[in-house]
Length: 424
Image 1 (cartoon, rainbow, N blue to C red):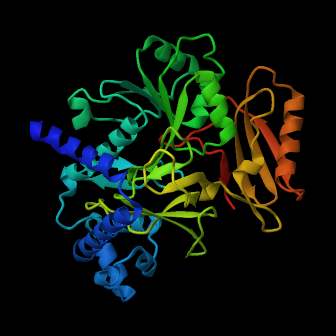
Image 2: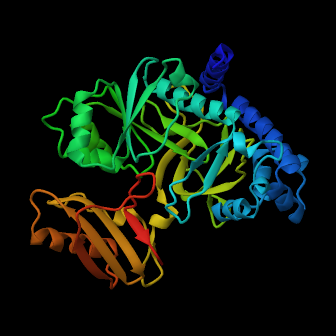
Image 3: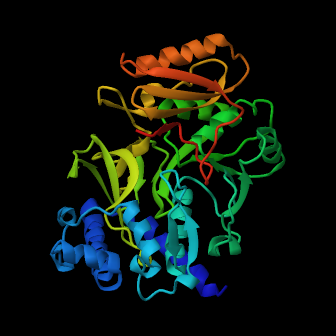
């Protein structure tokens, strides 16, 4: 790998570190400038967006400010999938060579996995943001990072080739005791995994020498109760990350823990309800526009998450806007017999003795199937408590609850566990 790649990557990280402290009006100017460039690009080079703009009578030069973005129709995952099936070139930059791109897949939790194409330039941006977020949370250049994730093929990027942010993946597709044994024998400073994996690990590591300096949580909803439990078990500081296979790292939490900083020189995040922007502090659907996805662009993309933005400023001095919280996936929410929609948080079962993992499946509005993995202390009373908690969370509506004890909970292709699967 040419030495120029090393300096090119470090330059991107340096730009991110500088921009986060710019005033918000300066960050807004960068966002809007990058937005105009990417929209001109997709109109000229990506047939999906050229067709979308033409069909809706939109000209890229009409979109000058963030508020103008609402003129562009939302983009769905199904649109992208259909485009890929029709012709890969329909959704990619016509000037790129798909055979020279790195291909990855989303988790497939909403159906068939989505194929993602990234050029060498995309990968530089992807890993610059990842490294930037790590460094801002206290990770050091030579730290070793262990990620407890679903097994997947991984190639070293320019960072690892120069000995920066050494990463080792440990598969979760093995007995928990094997994972514990691997972690206890490894020398590492940083641990990254899903909240559900941390909770599972926490039941077994009390007598093990597993002492990461920093831990990162991503890819599943994290509430304050779970955060406190994870922090107490690992006796360290947990940082939440937000991202997606489509975009890479989008936002990160600093040591003030007042929300996640959106890397706004690379992304625009909208929070919508019924297609309209909600006010800061209100819950809605997250829609993301990538400002540096030139190979496979995502403009006003419905990522599938529910979240809340904040209009506050963090005490850390960074002026990036904040995501107050990620509330869950759209498919995680349940519809009751009356038509009322409830959050998955209504049905949390973490306080019940004797349960290590659980998953709730909704085949119809008035039916819930609960899969439980037993732990020490499980009894018939555990099942009674499960039903009692769920009935309470369903706000008194008539719902039939079936409880099944299973050996394990099936995870998605990337290892993420869906707490709620609604087929309604």
